Image 1 (cartoon, rainbow, N blue to C red):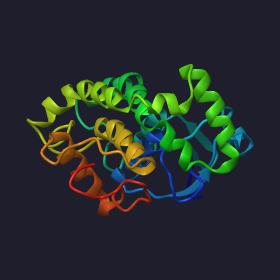
Image 2: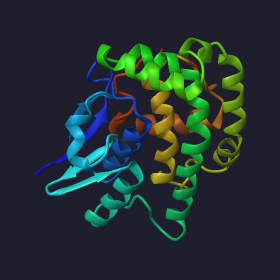
Image 3: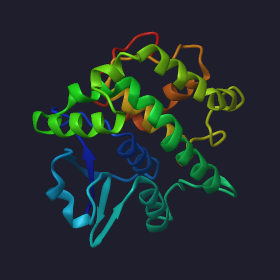
Length: 236
């Protein structure tokens, strides 16, 4: 039985914008694995009820069901040890664990404020009421009010990205000379932006831009060819 991956989709079923699903997409490509990618939307809880929870990504491998992008990455390395490791070498898993936590608790909360209204615009009609209600409850104000703080939100994200920028001045990937799961943890965030929003965050001379460009072209241009809303140009 082939691997099956449930991914968050917009009104266009080919628009897959979840940062966590992108971590898994890159992890699968890293290991040379393919999956039957199933589009899933916020209100389709019954479609993944078999997983015992209500979020994607969900990976199905025959009788095994794995949820949460981090657990999926660990599972892939355990299940397919003959393929390229996502956590190669001493200390790499610990680095990736820190980067994943930093991305999820610091970078994603800053980024979502920048693209919140753009995400709403991408959604299927049946998801929009749920998304607006749940996010406005979370932020305590309307999506439009969150979006109105665009400039300060972008400035806050740029400051938070400073450690990554400093590391990428010294080596091509966060993991060293080649990418590994730590890189995909943050790259998923940039694919979240690229796929769902036209906002441009990086200048061409930014080490993060150059790193992101290398990952866009990795695995035969998997990420660069993805359906997205970003306007291609000198910055992104």
